[in-house]
Image 1: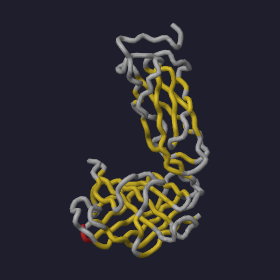
Image 2 (image 1 turned 90 degrees about the vertical axis):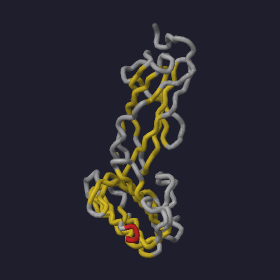
Image 3 (image 1 turned 120 degrees about the vertical axis):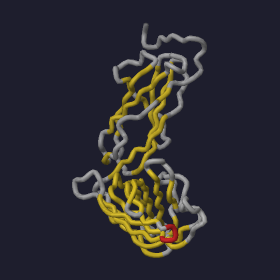
Image 4 (image 1 turned 90 degrees about the horizontal axis):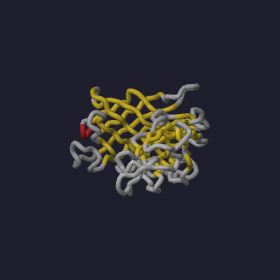
Length: 264
């Protein structure tokens, strides 16, 4: 049986399944080889052999992957590819499989964070008007919310350091960071992710996105967005903007006072 032979029980009109993407859970430095691995399985979708696999980054053209064992000749395959990204950012990386009867499976996508440890850092302090709907425990609450933060990479480190605090007094919410995961500075925007507590307790994840309006292309107005999530339940506790988490797509809220500075 050659590599393009297959055995089909009945009619196969479903593509193979990509169940996971391995190798991109941690942030990676720019210009570093990233080894992607993923299992592709057609055994429950027609049992045709896998013909090929592809990956795409941020919706760009699909590029070929290889079978880990060197040959596409089974209904279930491990696939691999090596990529390197020269610019910092948060990228949407997708993988899909194709079987020998040319069914293309649903793509599986994960976020890939690429950082430049020498690419600058971000600081901010000020306030916003927290609008109705931002605080999910009481969506009617509005009022001033104060923020202060710094996020930067120390020399040679691959995890950023700093502090983040966000206070919304009308909701009795005082969030303080405990640890950071990653930081990306790209153009006029900075985005970083980490964990923290609310009123000194719990385990909450947060994603902060900031715009330095004074940089060329920044629009002249500093902007801020913080999303806080209960890590145990996945429930959003606070989000002053809503919508996409994608760094390029999100449009943070104009601050009412203070400043945000991306240092390069």
